[in-house]
Image (cartoon, rainbow, N blue to C red; front, top):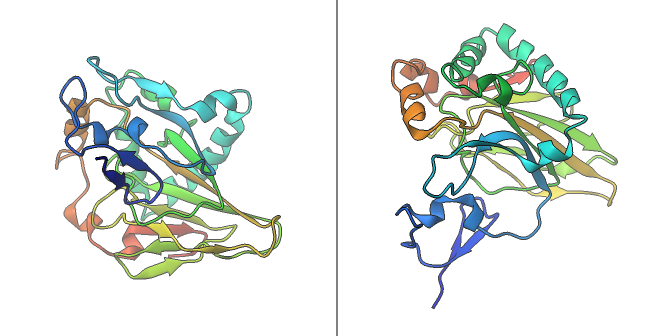
Length: 250
């Protein structure tokens, strides 16, 4: 008998026993590669720690989309730098930008991991993609992700950014940038509600810039120590502090 496990995001499944282990004794369900899904319109680029490295320590790898966009990805870096400069100048977000840059201290691949001069090291493109409630659990603790939405064709309805912990939904449209600690428990739960497209040429395209872990577990424990994170009040469930939008959406 096989058991079908469904991820909280609703995106993928694992068929097998929850107690299955890898050759080095870790839980096999903790690795993304063993989860299967139907083709989805979501693609990731940038750098990340490899999944299932076996007996070796995990190393930093380049995501497939970055390899496909190798000749043009520098344009995305330039766009990300514009958003990063806005984040650094905003009094509510500048301390988070400083913390994200500190994450790379002592990391030999730090400079090569970053998207240009920003603190982000990864990105995702989504087309008409709806997600269930989830946390971006591989994000660096305390880091801010940036969400940018592009509207293509006839105006769509729905696709709102949901914040269940605050009982709020945000209609993020073209021209708005949303910053969110999307990986932090207590403030980061998010989802998208149903999308209604009036015709086949109507699309919601989103770009997410984020900081995913590119250090080993030992380094992660060091950067996540109480001294390196911001004060406890910074992580209090106040949507005005945890989600910032530009221009003028707070």
